[in-house]
Length: 475
Image 1 (cartoon, helix red, strand yellow):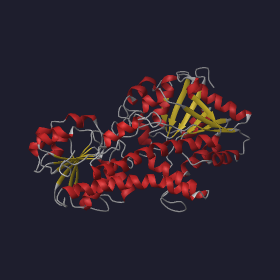
Image 2 (spheres, one colour):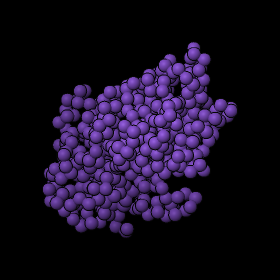
Image 3 (tube, helix red, strand yellow):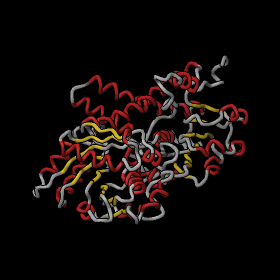
């Protein structure tokens, strides 16, 4: 270490986790040098520019506060590994698409490649930290690869899973509920864990920094996301019951959530959950349970994913059914494409599945989202749904991305609110109604609009878990 910095950190992977996490560490620890490395020159160039590769509220300000001082972004992977005392592995671990465990198991190829690179180029002992979400006991594979170095170097492997929510990632990093560090319970392992804990202790109270063994830490991330997704699927299952009986899911959520044993968070019914973590981590958990012969456990957690798929399909089918059983040739406005507000992330977004279904029904779809790029939309649709303008030339014409919300709605037969962007709550719906074909439908997949006011304007409104006044006369 040089006199200028107390510690040097290298993070392998400049994505949604690595970039923001390292930016906050650099901001809060000016005496620690932090460098994020990646194979992609395009990604690194974006981090070094004013147009960051990801959108996250507050991220730009955090990056600007430290870049060039003690925060750096580089493609010199070997050089930065050699300089570092601590190396974070923060690379993608996608669900396998083929081979053993396809559709459920996580592919840890990128983690292994990182470990092999670290072993090959390192010239001093290192602490290696798993930041990626990985199956339980991945650390053992990383440890075995690192031990095979022929230079007599020692590597301590730690697990330090992220618990970030996109849209609030900077707040989550600045004021986390907890920081979890798992490591070997040997003297060297405990020392390495304390070294990492001392980094976070620069701004996080010690009582919020938890240390466990490696396997508990790796498992905790999967379980945390599984529990959160389970709550979403639980209330979504009740939303279907509400629509059938005349009950109101929002009133049920409020009544149930006032029980301190249950709590009110993650009880908002919606078109379904999305993002890169929930489904991937649950399917990973399902595969782990299957691997260890825990069939009933695997089936239990798989039902959470099946319920989420059902909710997305149910929403699409309801749109078609309410619009006289056909949307062929009709313009439908999709407001929101990101999987949640305050992010541009489209991975596993429920909007994509609704758009896919409406396209299959022959609809003309106009999408407005303030942060989503058309190229990202196509890329995710090709990866997840297997359709793209390359495989289906009609797609480009049938799905339009509108520059503003009012042009997206002009002449439309129906609006589908699929992301809970705040701006959708304050639109001029009287203006929109006048510009639409009649009857004008609104399908609120996030329950963020004032439904009675919209009905007074003239809209026919359908929402998740809300009774339809055209069906029930005793509400």
